[in-house]
Image 1 (cartoon, rainbow, N blue to C red):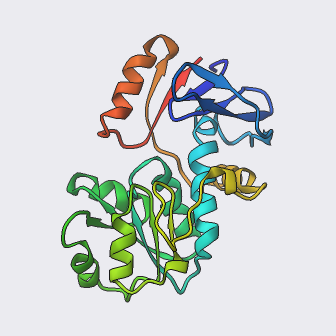
Image 2 (cartoon, rainbow, N blue to C red):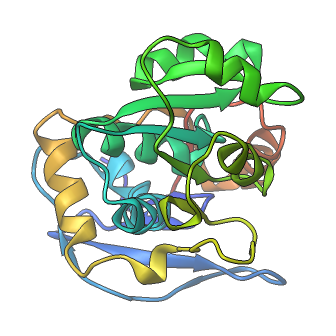
Length: 229
């Protein structure tokens, strides 16, 4: 078992009974910052626990804004990304139908998470309308503002749109700092019970951290990249 795991997106887990949040500085090396101690269920391995904090908390905070339920169809832009992995599955657990945007190459990956894939880019609104299953009632933009504008075009009110990557006037924004205090506990329990899975695309020793960061930056990875310390 590794002594600790550290996700290059900014998460860490200690092999003891708690997992700890970690921050990567924008202009410097990584700095460990204990934000909250969260009990790590025995059924969750260290590498998986290492991926939960920032992306999982951000997804939970955004979905809290949308208040999704079985009556909803939510459009998630950037559904295959680090936050999208959690957002898609949490929305499905809430009972919502999920339409996820991505490239043609991510279609099967999005289906495996529980989303109906649709190709992003020009004509997105028309492609969404062509899908069976009823109108979009909520939207989450995890990449920029394109999904916000498409959601408005589809008639989704601003109060049922959320963004994490950009500020759009009239549209609620969320990030991990807005997550409920028990968000990580809930996510860890869902992982432990098998209701939520975290794809790990690659693990590397800390000596190969540069290659791991380059792999993630290539945006051709399906899942998390974890560094073993």
